[in-house]
Length: 261
Length: 344
Image (cartoon, rainbow over all chains, first blue to last red; front, top):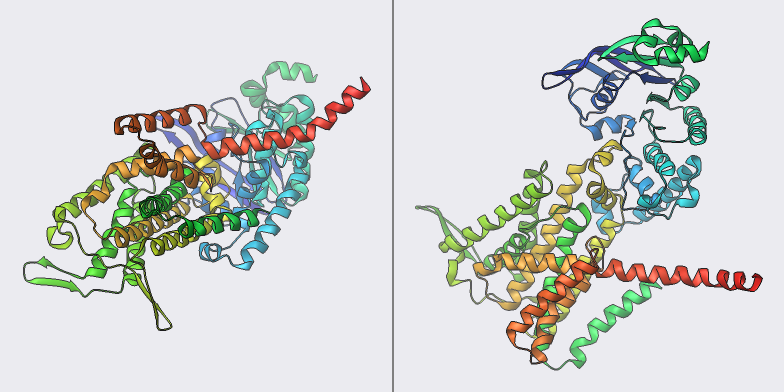
């Protein structure tokens, strides 16, 4: 258990009306690690994501990022701290080109004031040129270079999921939250996505993943937190999780155990 | 190449008063130009942030009234024994005042409606326009109500001892052209920048925009402020050209006209309001010149609108651009087909 704590979640509780989606969840994400959040549908994984990134307000508990409390911050303020997420339901700027999608993702890395923009200041054109160059670099990193000019809505599904990650990466996150990134991808695409996560970690980015694809989870994670009915039932390295009786009962199932042995 | 085409277009427009001797037609062009400026401002909100301001005429009217009142001067009693008066100001300052007041109102509307989108934004803007219209109609001491503000002075600019007076139509035509070009330039700079991308991001996917750190409200407020200011400039031009302003300037039909210009031309494109504005500004006059009965004029106006919205839902400019791109792609593809035929 090395590394400093990047994100700490302390007794997080989320309620929707009378339904408690997450109850007393506590865990920490350490700097530089790849942490997966797993559990059956309705376990509260996406709700936890939404609470961390400011899209819903927790009923109780505290969230903090590198010592800064996140409670009460708006999504864009949380993004400004370096926490950037993707969405479970494929989410891009569909009516724009792939390049423009990435350029929007770079919003926080540009700083021209509206007055300078309206005045046509020279610094604006300089920054624009630098942004476009950077956006192409991001597309190269993701592997979408040839699609730069294409309309996002015209991309095949697999590339759409890559574009989502490209938009998030364009914001240069320190902590990247991926919500079921390989859901719907075929095994080859999943394989190359696993390699991509490795390259994202190499950039110095901490990654928190929610995923159902166990091959991917077991393959890329340093640590896994397993949720069931809003509570954490296990927290440990992939090997420990595999052997955890409660995890097997609640989520992995006996078929998984049988296949393994 | 693009810059050359723009300059050529501007030169062509600037040459119009030199060869067009019919002053009535010049008047039509001036009014069309004023409406195009208003339509461009609406396009900034409707086309780029995706929020329909169905009370946009309020900003136009506020610009017209503020500029007129500042140039005429007024005395009002805010309390029975507390008169407030303003001495007449130079027209150029009044026009800037009109722009500023409209922009301020746009800022307030943006702030007030920071959480409402879609239909709710429409309701806020429609209500605002109606409130402003009722104030103009009923605050007789300030606005003369239905008696209208008369004898509004024309713009005079003194440059190095030489006075430029915008009384005649050619001078007004150039004034409108310059303001329109300036508005176009400002909007183009904005939408091609990080600020414009933030507005488009709000239109396309607000949740995703927030996730990459875009303060969506801030850019909606900025768009509302600029859009209202430009609409106010159009209103100020109108007031000092027509020289009479009554509460009719707040009529809903003007907002509808602007929306039609933007939607048929192509919302979210720079050229859209220009094309739509030219068509729907000049069409009624063109039909009249052809000797078509007024009833038929309005019917054909409506038919054309329905046809455009049905067959070119994105508007004329995106449709033409699409055909252009398709041709370019076909031109690239053709040699390939020729090769294939040769090898076959």
